[in-house]
Image (tube, rainbow, N blue to C red; front, top):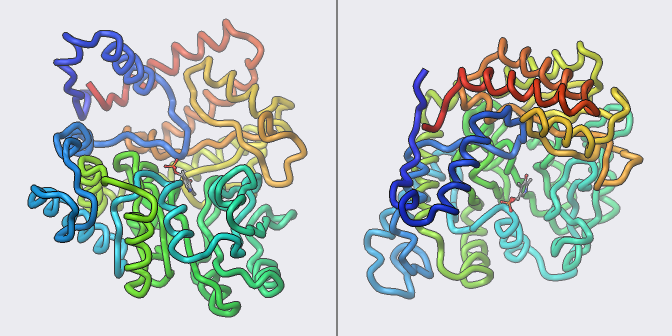
Length: 420
Ligand SMILES: *Cc1c(COP(=O)(O)O)cnc(C)c1O
C-alpha cells in the first residue's frame, strides 16, 4: 500500500537539519506506533498545506469586512468561507473561527456570558471534565465560582436527575456539558431542558466528539444550545485549533469576547486549514469515517473486556474508553502508559471516576480509535490492537518483551501507511 499523503520539507532538509530531523523522527514515531490517544488525529494533505501557507504573514485583527489593517481582501474570503462552512456543517446560527485553541475558546465563551465570580456547573476533571470546566488550578475555577457535578457511582454515567436537583440548589448562570474523558453518549436535549428549567445558559464543549456530531453519529447540540465550543483537531480531524458556535442573540458578545476581549490577530493560515477540514467533514466519506470510529471503539472495548480488563461504565458509545488497569491488572495508570510506550502503543494515564489514587498516578488509561480509523483500520485490526495492549500490559516489567512487541507493532502499522 502507498502512503496517502506527503509532507514537503525540502527546504528545511537542506537548511535546518536539527528541526528537520526532529520533525521526520516524529513522523516516523507516528507512523510506526499504535496511536490510541483519543484527542489526536492525522490531518489530510489539504489541511497540512493550508497550515504551512502564507496567510501566516498577515495581520487581520477584526472580522471579515471590518479589519483594523489594510490588505485583507483575500483573507476575508478565507475567513468568511470558514465561517459559512462551519455554520452549514453544524447547523449553527453564528460561528467564530478565530479561537486559537480549545482552552481559549472556553475562556472566550465564559467571558461573553458571565462576570467574574458568577456560578457555573461543569463536570469534575477526575470524572471526565476538562481543566477549563472549573478545576481550581485553572482560570475557570479561579475566576468563576464553579460548582462541579459528578457521575453516578454505580453506572459511572451521567445522572440527569441528580444534575437537575443540584442545579436547582446551585442556581448556576451557566451549565456546561461535553467532556474530555466520558465514553458514553450525552443526552444534550436533556441538558437543554435542565438549563431551561433553572434559567441557565446552556453551553457544550464538544471538543472530543465534534466529528461524531458533525457526521450525525452522535446528537449535535449546535442548533439548539446557546453556545457550543469545540477544538478542531480531535475527531473533527482538522488543524490544532478551535471554534465557537452560538445563537444569533449571543453573536456580538462572543465575537467581542474573542477579539478584542482576549485575542489579537487571528491565525489566518490555521483558519484556512479549518475551512479545508470543514469541507472534508461535510463529505459522505467523513460520515463513514465517524461511523467506523465508533464501530472500532466498540470492538476494541468488547475485546479488551473479554480479555479480562475492566472498562469504566462497561464499554463505550463514542471514540474512547477508560481502562481500569489498576483493578484489572494491578498496574497503575502511569506504569501502564510507560509499558505501552515502550511497545510503541500510545495512550495517556487517566483517573477513573471515584479514583482513590492520585491524578499523577491514577488507576486508569484512556484510549480511543480516531487515529487508527483514519489510517484505515477496521474491526478485525481492533482485535489485534487489543491483543497488543494486553500482551504489553502483561509484560509491563519486562523491557525485552516490550521491545519485541514494539517490532511486531511496527510491522502491523506498516500495513497502514499514511504520510510518506
Ligand atoms: C481538548 C479539550 C479542550 C482543550 O483544547 P486545547 O486545544 O488543548 O486547549 C477543551 N475542552 C475539552 C472538552 C477538550 O477535550
